[in-house]
Every structure is written in structure tokens, then in C-alpha cells.
Length: 531
Image 1 (cartoon, rainbow, N blue to C red):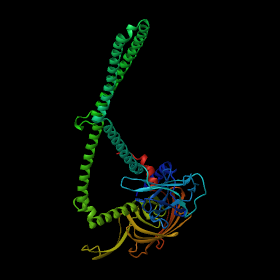
Image 2: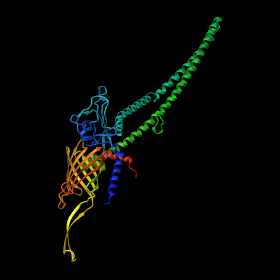
Image 3: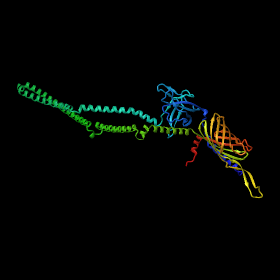
Image 4: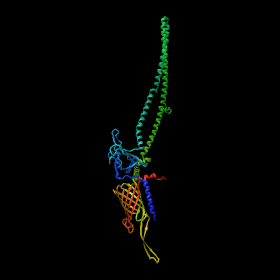
């Protein structure tokens, strides 16, 4: 290795660290398992709420869901545990006896978080009331939101609309029947004609009486003198007045009868329009409405027949839907597949990914060792560790080589001990299990079998790590390494330790690294270039 190479590598690491400080210095750390408490909420529908699903407040994750179970007090509802950060304080609210609800209290809403059917719970902390303690209940729990709530509202409203339409149709039928009984027959027309004939006959009788009275006066009264003449004059005047009155009365009766005839004609036209054949009915009339109603009823009947045929086919198990309803094995297989997919997506959703870059300076070797860690944590007490290591010392392999020579200046048989250095690129893949502050690891460590024990202190900011590996080295003890890591700033780690402690070639080292998890990776997305 050239003398300037370690210096260049060190400068590159320092530049990378400065870039990470500038980019990620403001990112916050995730919630520690020791900083949580559990409350619960009762939901009418807990579909899609898998254990480990997110709980958000104002769009920020503040906890995870526990395992939903049936509520022991009300088995028709689901009891869902909410594991929350202790910094989140929920209020019980004030009981409103009139509305029978908790007013201004904490609310838990079941909300769809993805297109594949995953759900999460969104909470609001509430404004009034006592603080909800551990194992307490969030009284206001909403199972439906968004489009599903709108559909439920439409379904409940339709139950009251159709009975009202039925009552309106009945009222129209009664009005039509009443008009048909009163004016739609011959007796009504005959009554109006009789009134007109009676008035005309009365007028003729008055005119005949006047003529007879004049004849009587001329023959019997006029010959008697002036008195009789005056009497007759008076009678004549009275008769004229009576004739005038009769004429005026007759004109009024004629106008009344004419109006009656007009009204009768209009009424007959109206009745004829309302009782016409639906095929020739005018727009807006009762027959036209009844015809449309008959067509709709016929269409509805056809739809019912089609529906009856479809339900019959379903009951007989015909077609794809019929098999889904009748074939128990197919339904069981589908339920099993759905359960497996749900479990897989729940596991993937709960997995948290950690990433760490670290560079250690080996004092005796005078070179840098680079390590990249990938940590896949499926549960709070279990994770998988994958490492890619660039070790400048590589791996030494010692063996004996025997050479037969014909050269008189060389021994006939030459035996040599050869030490071969393999590539410095190494891989680690380990399974880890945590128990309180101790973590036990085993698997492949730097391309050899190995195991390790970690001790975490001070809220996981200090790691004391011991590794034992590389058991197959010739004439050497296994490789024992002691390592301490301290997160002195969020995301930044200072390392130091002693490597190959059991052998004379032991070497101490010191290094610096940066680490972040999947929540920090999401913060990177706005800064990544688009393809």
C-alpha cells in the first residue's frame, strides 16, 4: 500500500462524515420500547388492524397496535390495544348526557393506509377531562371513515325514501279514482243538461202568462172607463217592468248556462285526458305517469326474475360465485391464502431496517478498515445482522510446501513454510436475540464461524461488544475482539477496542461511524435524484 493511501482514505471518510452531519443532523430518533404505555379502544370493525400496525398523531408515528381480541364485555366488538409513546397524553373528555357521548375527548379512528388493504389508527389527544392512564380506554372509537362511511350513510337513508314514494303513489291513485266516480259518467252530464232545460221552460211560462193577461184586460177591463184604463196602464207598466226583469234574468241565466257548458267541456276534456289510453296519453297526465310506472314495474319485475335466476344459480353452486359460496374447500383455501398474505404483509410492515457506515483505524497496521452494517429487526427482541467488511490485512493461511530439486547447489528435497494472504473482502451474517440489556449473536462473522455477546447501556447509546471467531487458524488462537461503541450525537458513533487479543499480533483501533434507521431513510427520499 502506498504511503499516501491511508491519508486519502481518512480524508474521504471525514468528508463523508461532514456530509452526513449536514444532511441528517436534525433527524430524530425512534421511540424506545421502555418509553411506552398501553391503552385500548373498542371498534365495531377491526378488519386490517394487524399487530404492529402504526398509530399516528398529526401524521407522525407515535405507537403501534397490539393484538386485537374480542371485547369480554361486548363480544360483538373488537378490543384493540394501543401502545403509545409516554410523551403522548390523552384526555378522557366530558360526558354529555343529552347526546350520550364523550365531548372534547381523545378519539381513535380506523383509517386505510395503503391500496392493499392495510389499516392504521389515527388518534387525537382530546382537550378536556382527566388524563387516560395505562390500561385505560379511549371512549371515542370510529371504525368507518372516508368513502366507506359515505356508503353506509346512503344505505341508511334509502330505507326511509322508498316508503315515502309508495305513499305518494297511493295518494295519486285515490285522487284519480275520485274524479272518475264524480264526473266520468253519464249521470253528471245529465244533471247539468236538466238545469239548463228547467231555466228555459220557466222563461216560456212567464211569456205566455203576459200574453194571456193582456187579452183579459182588453176584453174585460178596458170597456169600463178611465179608471180601468188607468188600472190597465199601471198593469201594462208593471208587465213591462216584469218583462224587462225577465229579459235581464234570462240573459244572466244564459251567461250562467254558457259558463256551465264551458266548464263542463273543459271538465270533460280533463277527464278524457286523465282516462285516455296510456299509449295515446298526453305528457304530464295521469295515464302517461301510470304508463311510465307500469314500464318501470315491468322492468323491475324482469330484474327480479333475473335476480331470481342468479340466486338460483348461486344456490346450486354454478359459476365462479356459486363455487365460492358452495365449495367449502375452495373457500377454506382462499381464507388460508388471505391469512398467509396478511401475516406476510404484517411481518414486512413491522420490520425495521438499520444502516451503519463505520471506518476504524488500525494502529499497528497503519491502515483503515471499513464496515457496512445492515440490521433487519423483525421484533423488539430479535434481529438479523448482515455486514460487508473491507479488511486491509485480509486472512492469512499457513501451509508447508515440499520441493524436489536436481540442482546440485540446492538441497535435493526443500521444505518451505508458506504464508498466503487471501482477499480482504469479508462478509458477516448473524442472527441475534436480545434479553434485557444482553444480546447474543451467532452465525458467520467475517467469512468464518463465530459468535458474540453485546451489552447495551444508557438507553442503547453505549454498546460493549465481544466477538470470538476464526477458529481454524494454524498455530494461532481464535480471534477475540473487544469493541465499544458510543453514540455521542444522534446518528453518530465513536468506536474503539482491541482486536486479536489472544495472539501476539493483537492490534488496537479507533474509528468513527454514522447510522440511521428506516424512518431516517424516508427523510432521504426528497433528496434522491429522479431516474
